Image 1: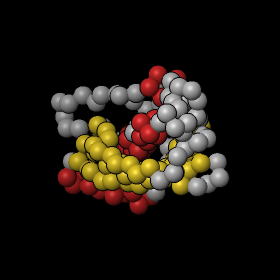
Image 2: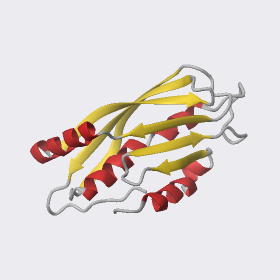
Image 3: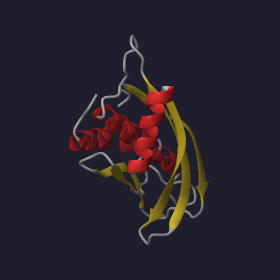
Image 4: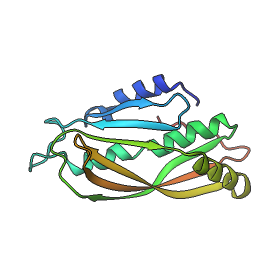
Length: 161
């Protein structure tokens, strides 16, 4: 389902798994090429050591590549199923305050997905993400593997958000 960036931003902000972990979508770009997210430290996501719980950081990275690719490919006429196939994270520095990340889909990334979907029917690729603190210091490095399937006739698209 195609939705406006502002509608999706508010839907994601109020989505309970993100909301209660204080994962806040700051902005989807108008063309769905990027998203900026803030992970606010609070008593709801603070661990024993006083930093942001690693599971919160990990959860924050989960949906966004899939959402961006889904919206971009729908606008190109595809009927797709998109999900995060796998992910890995390296925690490099404790998140003692709010954390931030921005991910972007480049023309090359979109063209590669488009061409592969047209020829093979599915596309699987891992993309990096960097989580930084207020000072711009790298706190976590994430690799998200996105799975995109071009749905064939007879299959119904399913909306996960």
